[in-house]
Length: 266
Image 1 (spheres, rainbow, N blue to C red):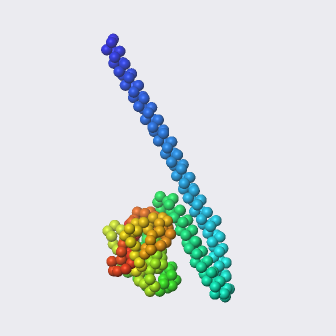
Image 2 (cartoon, helix red, strand yellow; image 1 turned 90 degrees about the horizontal axis):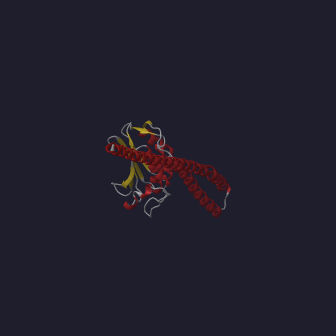
Image 3 (cartoon, helix red, strand yellow; image 1 turned 180 degrees about the vertical axis):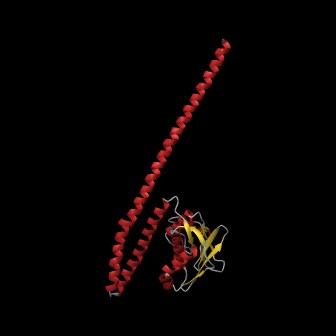
C-alpha cells in the first residue's frame, strides 16, 4: 500500500506540474496573441495615418500651391516692371520647389505602406526610351546629350513604378550636371538581373555620403547632391519592391557619378 501511495503521489505531482506548465504556456500564448493583435492594430492605425497624411499633402497643401502657381504665371505674362518680374520669378521657382517636395513626400508616404507590388514582363529599354522622350524639354534647357546604348530587349519583372526610378536618375543628372554635359545610360547583363546605369558628369558624391543620399530627408554637403533626399529615397523604395538593389559609384571615365539599379530578369 505504501508503494502504491508513493506511485500515486508521484503521478499526481507530475500531472500537477504538467498542468501548471500547460497553464503557463497557454497564458504566454494568450499574452503573445494580445500583443500581436495590439501590434496589428497599431500598424493598421499607422498605415491609415500615413494615407491620411498623403491625402492632406495632396489636397490641403498642393491645391493652395497650385493656386499660387496659376496667379504667378499670369502675373509673369502681364508684368513689365523688371524688378517685379525678378520677384515673381523668385516666387515661381520657390513655389515649384514646394510643389515638387509635396508630391515627393506624398509619393513616399504611399510607397512606405506597400509590402509588395504586382509585377509583369516589361522591356526596360522601352521604359528608358519613354523617360528620355518625356524629359526632352529639360534635356534641351540644359543642352545635354543623353545617350542610351541599347543592344536589344531587356525583359524584366517590373511595375510601372520602375519609370520613376529612371526619371529620378535622369533628373538629378540634368539638375546637377554641367551645361552641354553628357549623360550615358547603359543596361548591363548581371546574371539573373539587369543593371541599369546612369553616368553623369556632375561634381560626384563623396564616399562618406554614397549611402546617406538614399535615406529620406538627408542632405549632404557641398559637392554632392543637394536635394531634399526624398527623390532618391523613393527610388530606393521602388527598387526594393522589385527585389533589386541600387547605389552610386564614381564615374570611371572622369568627373561625375554612376547611379545604378538592378531588376530581376523576366
